[in-house]
Image 1 (cartoon, rainbow, N blue to C red):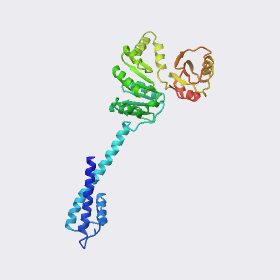
Image 2: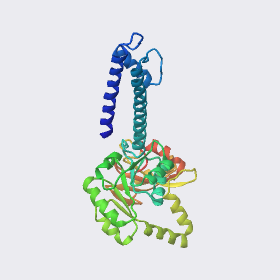
Image 3: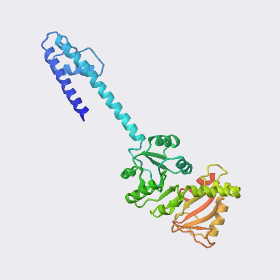
Image 4: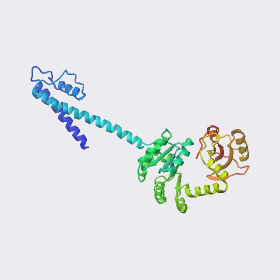
Length: 341
């Protein structure tokens, strides 16, 4: 505000000098500046550094005032260039930090960045889904943009306490939100606050202390992953059944290459060719027609492992299959829907 006032005062003084030089010059018979319009033209070509030379002061007082006009022109030009540069840089910085938000829908949001979050993001990104990262660290935001900079990713720099700002990642239209803080107590407080602001979110929590898993589950989140608990099971599996562990690791990773195996989940739509079929019939047909193995169903948000042969597949169920990494696009075309929740 103060800079604007100084600018307005400067412009008024500048125009006053232009008016005075016109008054002084028109009294000289050899003058070429005879009106305010002539003086204003002289000031404009001076301001723009064009300098046609068609108008210029010939009197001593006029030349002195002209010197002030030249200096004033440099000041105004410098201010305008600085202001334009500042606004461009400010716009680019706001865009870089996600200030203008995103229109992503059916995307996945990661709140809090770390090496573990990066591994999670890799799986989601390789599966072809959109990711939005929310972080309070500009360094983490820059790293995220460098790693995944594409039309399927968006980063937002924000204070975690500023919950209304989460609207910028279109959080209410996301598929799931992964909260990844270092401290479980910080996670607990944040979950309670964000559930109050956005009660219908599908939230997954990374829990570092297995003893707090039940406490975090009582907050009403959808899933609590005790990272060390999962890791200990995998290590134990590698110890006494290493080939099973290798297969399990492959299955829970996003399949990318031809020989990768992947467990995938697809929602059943009305148009799904296996809608209305019995589980055993669908199992046989999928193996024959798509070379995938049907291993389970999700009905009414309940996972059914190895369902009964006569279990009917219905709309809004989820089918869970094992397929090769290069088979995903074919499955998505057949089922008419993208992989995931």
